[in-house]
Length: 230
Image (cartoon, rainbow, N blue to C red; front, top):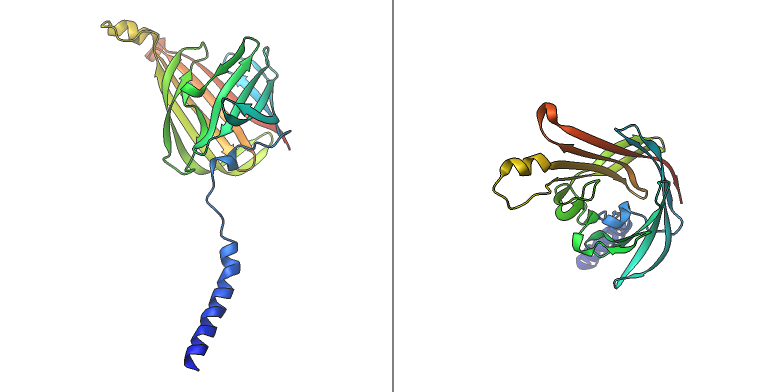
């Protein structure tokens, strides 16, 4: 009788815990911060330190295949030259696969460029190849700095945002003995962007600084989400 009673109590405890276990949330992954659904549209307001302003609209197109990956194409409009970018979830994160402009399709596979990588937590870091506004390539170090930011933009206030920082230094002259020549052409680049769960990118900043002290020259660009449609 005692054994039956013990088994009955254990069964009751397990039955009570099962509903609780079903409510446990799975850990967030990169796909939670970058929707791939067809038709999702983001409209951003961009502002440059040069005084230029305008709108940029990004729309998810139908999924397809590219370089052996299942990709989603994003159509970018609003600037002078519309273009298309391709992304995939390769298990390690959301990867930038290619960009298509009027000049044709260019692979980004060698850049190892990710929008966000797993695990989605503070401290996750990766290396990638980036480019300055004038196309100069450099090695960037990208890090998830927060997973709990609150961001307010024209489209609303978003909680639980991931904040990503990317930083690097570009130089047009490498492997030379004249350090002054390298310093004169050096550009320090720093990016921040925020991704909201279920929404994706909501804000971003890009800053390029050349030179030091009073001779320093810089240019900055910011993006803020105005509308999100799904």
